[in-house]
Amino acid sequence: MENNQQVGSKIKAIRESKGLTIEDVAERSSLSTEQIYRIEEDIELPSLAPLIAIARVLGVRLGTFLDDHDEIGPVVCKNGEKDKSISFSNNADDARKHMGYYSLAKSKSGRHMEPFIIEVTSSGEELYAQSSHEGEEFIYVLEGSIEINYGKKIYRLSQGDSIYYDSIVAHHVHAISGESARIMAVVYTPF
View 1 (cartoon, rainbow, N blue to C red):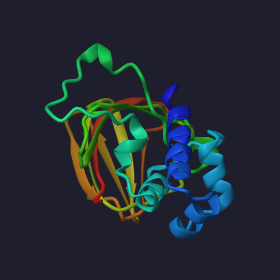
View 2 (view 1 turned 90 degrees about the vertical axis):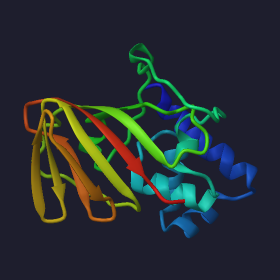
View 3 (view 1 turned 180 degrees about the vertical axis):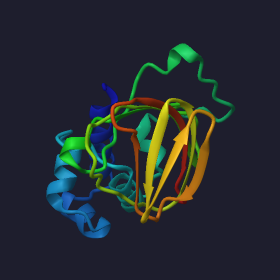
View 4 (view 1 turned 90 degrees about the horizontal axis):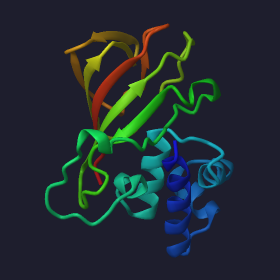
């Protein structure tokens, strides 16, 4: 997952360009200095929640960390172009690599949504650390079946099913034990 390293280095470069220390970002984002350091040095795969908090502190959109370019018009992503993935985690050590994110709009500037194709593999775990962040998410299952822990409820979705929810509610998306799935997800975070 080559782009993982780009996320950390982009955060560090933006932070330094704004004259902020790791301590400044930690204090303003309510994250620990150790977590910011681990993200910047690519030791820790961040979940969306810390990335959104860091983006807010740095005054940039989430997409800035995900290989932003400056295309103003439409962006077309051909099937063979989805070969670079970005990984996020839910901050649980045992679940850091259960999802590979393939951005569908990485070169679109000024975007407010982050569309992804996500390969979801079974982590073999039955307990999941839920996360929450500002915004909304839409998920459409392309192949296989997934389970979404959303607050205290559990939703099972199969091929052709979809769900739209507020991301502020603690949630976790995962494949059903022993299976894998492929989904399209659109994440919206207000800026």
